[in-house]
Length: 347
Image (cartoon, rainbow, N blue to C red; front, top):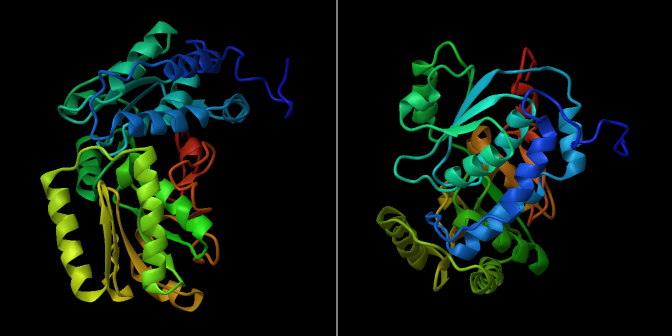
């Protein structure tokens, strides 16, 4: 049997551990996971939503394409799982384990999140996925993947000089939307991971009058909160939201409800800082968009738009509503991550 693109299907064995056939069984087990005992800052509904998103990106046809990519896999790999995005390791697990790479996941200290579930499901289908604690979890791996603050990435590079380190430091994402329908989708982007993580929109840029854009986003955020409630926030996050609220009351527009807030501010107040279920809104047109974002261009990860797009090739462009659901085959912060997880492939 072959897939419609003529490649060997993902269900075919590959590698010493069952390859993508085992990955497909692992994926199907994750669909049935009991999340009752999983502790994350997300609400139960929020965790179910992002887990569903991550699993559905591992469709059979996409796994076929990944399986057909030429190159030699790394024998061993380790990943430091980011605190803000508990589903982040799922796509890396699927690709690395499918190729036969033995993988260790290092969860955030004191927050195992989904890692025990991923490991248990992998063990049930014979995939070489384990969990490690502390800095030792990354030691000895040929490939090390780390996502976090820039200082964290630098530290990992320094402590693992003999490994190939794929480091993804601080980046941010924004959305540009004019229509009510597109603004509704921006709110749906913002509820995933409660607005944390590099693919979350930190702000809405809109050519509409500020009060009008804020009102449309506020109504959408209220509806989104009703469908998927926000989880917990830290005292530092709460303080940051209050600080921005005070500024918006003095200089712009404030809308807020249970679990969400919208702060309309002048464009010069734009900051590439994400806060949980709290978006800033800035008036921007196609003529002013480049000037607003250019100072931060090197750190811009994803730009969702129903209109103009910045001319920077490393930035992922998508429609509103797709920010937090990137396809498996893509550039990640300008890096061909699928090529980078093969030995000797240029990125």
